[in-house]
Length: 168
Image 1 (tube, helix red, strand yellow):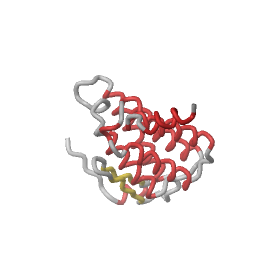
Image 2 (image 1 turned 30 degrees about the vertical axis):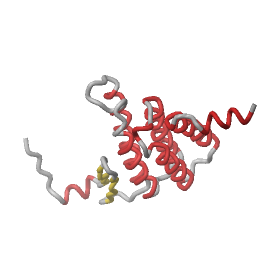
Image 3 (image 1 turned 180 degrees about the vertical axis):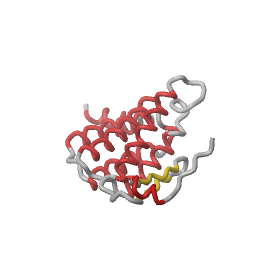
């Protein structure tokens, strides 16, 4: 009955619980309206799920990367930017995920695919950070333990005012 199931969940390995939590988060994402606050809440929950990289298996880590990508795509599709907390939580989650050895390591050929996913996430968060920003000199930082990126938007007219030198 129910008590056996409850006991099994109570003593399940932590990795299995994190995997189940990620599955539940996907379910919540599917029925949640895309707003800046809701995406921040969802990414905050994901951040809690991935905060212990040694308790994540490959599927949970890969699913977490996919979740970040989907959440950020939804903000862009809704023509929303991201809050500073969403940006910080994304950087933190990526930093944690970069420490999952079964996903990011030099000896696994799949690591290249996961690195490409992480690059997509960085591009999406950059686009979301700059969404609606007035061109001509807007910059936003993204910073976590293992992630630092600065996104900047300018116009061609503004660039004409400053010479650009390219060293070859």
